[in-house]
Image 1 (tube, rainbow over the protein chains, first blue to last red):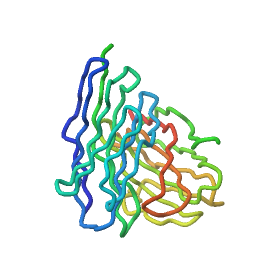
Image 2 (cartoon, rainbow over the protein chains, first blue to last red):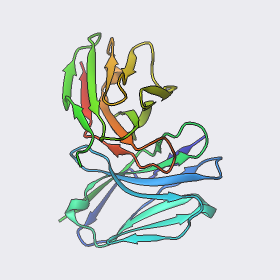
Image 3 (cartoon, each protein chain N blue to C red):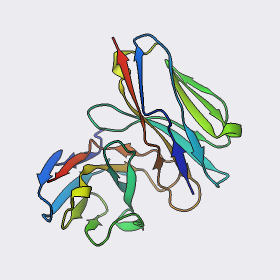
Length: 115
Length: 115
Protein backbone atom coordinates (compact mmCIF):
# COMPACT_ATOMS: atom_id res chain seq x y z
CA UNK A 1 0.00 0.00 0.00
CA UNK A 2 1.11 3.53 -0.68
CA UNK A 3 1.06 6.11 2.10
CA UNK A 4 2.42 9.62 2.53
CA UNK A 5 2.64 11.31 5.91
CA UNK A 6 3.09 15.04 6.39
CA UNK A 7 3.11 15.41 10.14
CA UNK A 8 3.28 19.21 10.12
CA UNK A 9 -0.22 20.54 9.62
CA UNK A 10 0.66 24.24 9.80
CA UNK A 11 3.91 26.18 9.99
CA UNK A 12 4.40 29.92 10.41
CA UNK A 13 7.72 31.62 9.82
CA UNK A 14 8.86 35.19 9.57
CA UNK A 15 10.00 36.37 6.16
CA UNK A 16 13.63 35.48 5.34
CA UNK A 17 13.69 32.54 7.72
CA UNK A 18 14.46 29.07 6.39
CA UNK A 19 11.78 26.40 6.73
CA UNK A 20 11.75 22.64 6.17
CA UNK A 21 8.62 20.69 5.32
CA UNK A 22 8.75 17.02 6.23
CA UNK A 23 7.47 14.10 4.16
CA UNK A 24 7.63 10.42 5.07
CA UNK A 25 6.37 7.77 2.69
CA UNK A 26 5.58 4.06 2.63
CA UNK A 27 5.57 1.81 -0.40
CA UNK A 28 6.34 -1.78 -1.31
CA UNK A 29 7.41 -0.84 -4.82
CA UNK A 30 11.12 -0.83 -5.59
CA UNK A 31 10.61 1.78 -8.27
CA UNK A 32 8.54 4.79 -7.36
CA UNK A 33 8.37 8.52 -7.81
CA UNK A 34 8.04 11.28 -5.26
CA UNK A 35 6.60 14.70 -5.95
CA UNK A 36 6.07 18.03 -4.26
CA UNK A 37 3.20 20.30 -5.27
CA UNK A 38 2.34 23.82 -4.12
CA UNK A 39 -1.29 24.87 -3.74
CA UNK A 40 -1.64 28.65 -3.43
CA UNK A 41 -4.93 30.27 -2.36
CA UNK A 42 -6.10 30.20 -5.98
CA UNK A 43 -6.43 26.43 -5.60
CA UNK A 44 -4.40 25.20 -8.54
CA UNK A 45 -1.77 22.59 -7.73
CA UNK A 46 1.62 23.65 -9.05
CA UNK A 47 4.25 21.00 -9.73
CA UNK A 48 7.58 21.66 -7.99
CA UNK A 49 9.71 18.55 -8.32
CA UNK A 50 9.76 14.86 -9.21
CA UNK A 51 12.34 12.32 -7.98
CA UNK A 52 12.62 8.65 -8.83
CA UNK A 53 13.60 6.09 -6.24
CA UNK A 54 17.00 5.43 -7.81
CA UNK A 55 18.17 8.99 -7.64
CA UNK A 56 19.06 10.02 -4.12
CA UNK A 57 20.95 13.11 -5.09
CA UNK A 58 19.73 16.19 -3.34
CA UNK A 59 18.45 18.91 -5.60
CA UNK A 60 18.55 22.66 -5.38
CA UNK A 61 16.48 25.05 -7.45
CA UNK A 62 16.91 28.64 -6.45
CA UNK A 63 15.63 29.00 -2.89
CA UNK A 64 14.17 25.50 -2.93
CA UNK A 65 16.04 22.32 -2.04
CA UNK A 66 15.01 18.73 -1.52
CA UNK A 67 16.60 16.03 0.62
CA UNK A 68 15.70 12.47 -0.40
CA UNK A 69 16.79 9.70 1.99
CA UNK A 70 15.66 6.17 1.21
CA UNK A 71 17.07 4.88 4.49
CA UNK A 72 14.48 6.89 6.41
CA UNK A 73 11.83 6.96 3.64
CA UNK A 74 11.83 10.73 3.71
CA UNK A 75 11.69 13.42 1.06
CA UNK A 76 11.97 16.75 2.83
CA UNK A 77 11.61 20.17 1.25
CA UNK A 78 13.48 23.27 2.42
CA UNK A 79 12.74 26.85 1.46
CA UNK A 80 15.64 29.20 2.13
CA UNK A 81 15.02 32.87 2.88
CA UNK A 82 11.26 32.47 2.76
CA UNK A 83 9.08 35.10 1.13
CA UNK A 84 5.44 36.03 1.56
CA UNK A 85 4.69 34.54 -1.88
CA UNK A 86 5.73 31.15 -0.51
CA UNK A 87 2.59 31.10 1.64
CA UNK A 88 0.58 28.13 0.42
CA UNK A 89 -0.30 24.53 1.18
CA UNK A 90 2.45 22.13 0.14
CA UNK A 91 1.70 18.52 -0.74
CA UNK A 92 4.07 15.62 -0.95
CA UNK A 93 2.90 12.79 -3.23
CA UNK A 94 3.96 9.29 -4.18
CA UNK A 95 3.39 7.29 -7.34
CA UNK A 96 4.31 3.63 -7.59
CA UNK A 97 5.54 1.89 -10.71
CA UNK A 98 3.12 -1.03 -10.49
CA UNK A 99 -0.63 -1.00 -10.43
CA UNK A 100 -2.59 2.18 -10.92
CA UNK A 101 -0.35 5.07 -11.79
CA UNK A 102 -2.16 7.56 -9.65
CA UNK A 103 -0.68 9.97 -7.15
CA UNK A 104 -1.10 9.34 -3.44
CA UNK A 105 -1.03 12.66 -1.63
CA UNK A 106 -0.22 13.52 1.94
CA UNK A 107 -2.55 15.75 3.91
CA UNK A 108 -0.45 18.83 3.19
CA UNK A 109 1.40 21.42 5.23
CA UNK A 110 0.05 24.96 5.32
CA UNK A 111 2.94 27.41 5.31
CA UNK A 112 2.36 31.01 6.33
CA UNK A 113 5.19 33.47 5.83
CA UNK A 114 4.71 36.57 7.96
CA UNK A 115 6.11 39.81 6.56
CA UNK B 1 0.39 26.85 -23.82
CA UNK B 2 -3.09 26.85 -22.27
CA UNK B 3 -3.46 24.96 -19.01
CA UNK B 4 -6.18 22.63 -17.81
CA UNK B 5 -9.54 24.40 -17.88
CA UNK B 6 -12.39 23.64 -15.51
CA UNK B 7 -15.88 25.03 -15.08
CA UNK B 8 -17.70 26.13 -13.12
CA UNK B 9 -15.28 27.40 -10.49
CA UNK B 10 -17.92 27.35 -7.76
CA UNK B 11 -21.21 25.54 -7.33
CA UNK B 12 -23.70 25.49 -4.48
CA UNK B 13 -26.50 22.94 -4.52
CA UNK B 14 -28.85 21.28 -2.08
CA UNK B 15 -28.53 17.64 -1.15
CA UNK B 16 -30.20 15.21 -3.52
CA UNK B 17 -29.72 17.60 -6.44
CA UNK B 18 -27.53 16.77 -9.42
CA UNK B 19 -24.41 18.58 -10.56
CA UNK B 20 -21.93 18.30 -13.41
CA UNK B 21 -18.37 19.55 -13.79
CA UNK B 22 -16.46 20.03 -17.01
CA UNK B 23 -12.75 19.70 -17.74
CA UNK B 24 -10.70 20.45 -20.83
CA UNK B 25 -7.15 19.05 -20.57
CA UNK B 26 -3.99 20.41 -22.11
CA UNK B 27 -3.97 19.82 -25.84
CA UNK B 28 -2.35 16.52 -26.73
CA UNK B 29 -2.58 15.04 -23.26
CA UNK B 30 -3.94 11.51 -23.49
CA UNK B 31 -4.45 10.92 -19.80
CA UNK B 32 -7.05 12.73 -17.71
CA UNK B 33 -7.68 12.46 -14.00
CA UNK B 34 -10.45 13.59 -11.65
CA UNK B 35 -9.53 14.11 -8.01
CA UNK B 36 -11.66 14.96 -4.97
CA UNK B 37 -10.07 17.20 -2.36
CA UNK B 38 -11.99 17.47 0.90
CA UNK B 39 -11.11 20.44 3.08
CA UNK B 40 -7.92 19.80 5.03
CA UNK B 41 -6.98 16.72 3.04
CA UNK B 42 -4.87 15.90 0.04
CA UNK B 43 -6.48 15.17 -3.32
CA UNK B 44 -7.80 11.64 -3.80
CA UNK B 45 -8.10 10.09 -7.24
CA UNK B 46 -11.65 9.35 -8.37
CA UNK B 47 -11.11 8.22 -11.95
CA UNK B 48 -8.36 8.09 -14.57
CA UNK B 49 -8.89 8.01 -18.35
CA UNK B 50 -6.47 7.08 -21.08
CA UNK B 51 -7.95 8.66 -24.22
CA UNK B 52 -11.64 7.70 -23.92
CA UNK B 53 -11.10 4.54 -21.88
CA UNK B 54 -11.17 4.18 -18.10
CA UNK B 55 -7.84 3.08 -16.57
CA UNK B 56 -8.82 3.21 -12.91
CA UNK B 57 -12.15 4.02 -11.27
CA UNK B 58 -11.71 1.95 -8.13
CA UNK B 59 -12.24 4.97 -5.84
CA UNK B 60 -15.28 6.34 -7.67
CA UNK B 61 -18.57 5.96 -5.73
CA UNK B 62 -20.38 4.53 -8.71
CA UNK B 63 -23.82 4.61 -7.12
CA UNK B 64 -23.83 8.39 -7.42
CA UNK B 65 -20.77 9.50 -9.40
CA UNK B 66 -20.22 9.05 -13.11
CA UNK B 67 -17.67 10.39 -15.55
CA UNK B 68 -17.14 10.26 -19.26
CA UNK B 69 -14.61 11.32 -21.85
CA UNK B 70 -16.45 10.41 -25.02
CA UNK B 71 -14.12 11.82 -27.65
CA UNK B 72 -10.93 11.43 -25.68
CA UNK B 73 -10.54 15.14 -25.09
CA UNK B 74 -12.75 16.96 -22.58
CA UNK B 75 -14.52 15.22 -19.75
CA UNK B 76 -17.51 15.63 -17.47
CA UNK B 77 -17.94 14.41 -13.92
CA UNK B 78 -21.49 14.10 -12.58
CA UNK B 79 -22.90 13.58 -9.12
CA UNK B 80 -26.48 12.39 -8.85
CA UNK B 81 -27.84 12.71 -6.19
CA UNK B 82 -25.42 14.80 -4.15
CA UNK B 83 -24.83 14.22 -0.45
CA UNK B 84 -23.50 16.60 2.17
CA UNK B 85 -20.19 14.70 2.28
CA UNK B 86 -19.62 15.46 -1.41
CA UNK B 87 -18.71 19.04 -0.49
CA UNK B 88 -15.14 19.34 -1.75
CA UNK B 89 -12.97 20.77 -4.49
CA UNK B 90 -12.98 18.65 -7.63
CA UNK B 91 -9.68 18.86 -9.45
CA UNK B 92 -9.02 17.79 -12.99
CA UNK B 93 -5.50 16.98 -14.15
CA UNK B 94 -3.91 15.77 -17.36
CA UNK B 95 -0.64 14.22 -18.44
CA UNK B 96 0.91 13.23 -21.74
CA UNK B 97 0.41 9.53 -21.05
CA UNK B 98 -0.01 6.93 -18.37
CA UNK B 99 3.25 6.30 -16.57
CA UNK B 100 4.67 7.06 -13.17
CA UNK B 101 7.18 9.52 -14.58
CA UNK B 102 4.60 11.65 -16.36
CA UNK B 103 3.96 14.95 -14.65
CA UNK B 104 0.33 15.78 -13.99
CA UNK B 105 -0.87 19.32 -14.65
CA UNK B 106 -3.81 20.47 -12.57
CA UNK B 107 -6.68 22.80 -13.27
CA UNK B 108 -8.00 25.41 -10.80
CA UNK B 109 -10.72 23.10 -9.51
CA UNK B 110 -14.45 23.38 -8.92
CA UNK B 111 -15.48 24.08 -5.35
CA UNK B 112 -18.75 22.27 -4.59
CA UNK B 113 -20.85 23.09 -1.55
CA UNK B 114 -23.77 20.80 -0.78
CA UNK B 115 -26.31 22.27 1.66
